[in-house]
Image (cartoon, rainbow, N blue to C red; front, top):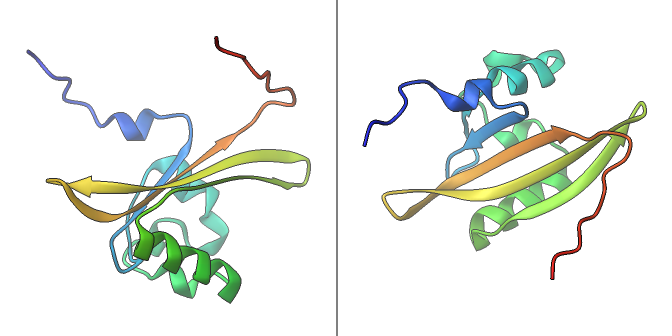
Length: 115
């Protein structure tokens, strides 16, 4: 089977960031770099998430890393709503850190009930 040779995450319409098991930021797509441009953008690569967040958020990050679990929430700032999903990622079956996906939400998001 032929696999595509493009970096799909660069074309993904959401901000995607990845940290390792110590909370060090190791990857960001272009939208994530733009999203965090006021905080350094691409220069954030190699820095600790713990240096970028207040202590309540750092405790959540520590818990996610220790428990290898996901966290999902909505945020709103200046009338823009975003869905934030933080979830573990794995390399060769071993826990490797967390990914964060931030999706800008439209004004109306329908709920679809499945049977």
